[in-house]
Image (cartoon, rainbow, N blue to C red; front, side, top):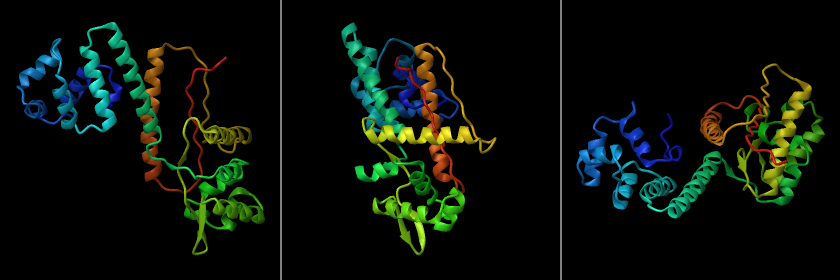
Amino acid sequence: MNDSVFNFNNYKDFLNQRLHSENSTRGIQSQLAKHLSCQSSYIYQVLKSKNDLTDDQAYLTTTFFKLSALETNHFLLLVRYSKAATKELKSFLFNEIKTNKLESEKLLYHSDATPAVNSDEGWSFYFSSLLPSYIHMLTSSPKYQSVESLSLKLKTDKSVISSTLLELKKYGFVDFEKNLWINKNPNIHFSKESIHNYNLHILRRSQAMASIVKMNTHNDLHFSSLFTLDHESYEFIKKQILENIKKIQKKIHAGGSDELFVMCLDLFSPQI
């Protein structure tokens, strides 16, 4: 089970997981009690009864587990929510918790991405067809850092490959070093509100549709589904996808760069 604080709606559940899971360090509850200047039995009472941590103890708990600033804020919000006495305050804190969780999901999704090229003109060229993005990403592989190899891979005339590479170089996507075309911006992202973010999704899905039409290989994976679902299950599925995206990103960055692949993932409520 992933024990990220963002996966919990109750801070006591988070503490139980951190203190009593199979991977917990022996004696960790006593160590936490020492850090909080209290008895281990007090922590037991907090976990098993209506008692709550004080605000100071809650903050010290975040330093004990070495939580990030965003994780710390989330944990403190959960503690405040647990102690809130009025419906109005609970409603306010619930919205704060929800906003904080959404922010964490955004950071999770972009955790391994680098800033995008700062040029509207450059991105207009990048999204003008499938070819610029194909060439751009292929140059991250040592197999495809020459005009000749790119031409063979993409079944495209060398003159077209050369002109596209020059444009990509102009906008900082690639560079020419020691007679090789080198990728200079392998991982890109945009803010959710950016028109380039919209164009990026359109481009990737165009690549997916091209794959479906051509049916190049039986190894390709395409899946689409329309369904009804309760909100709690929807949130669970979204969390699982985000966690797996992070694992996949690590595998992508740790793996080789032999060939070019495209991955599109969508989970949304359609606006009718």
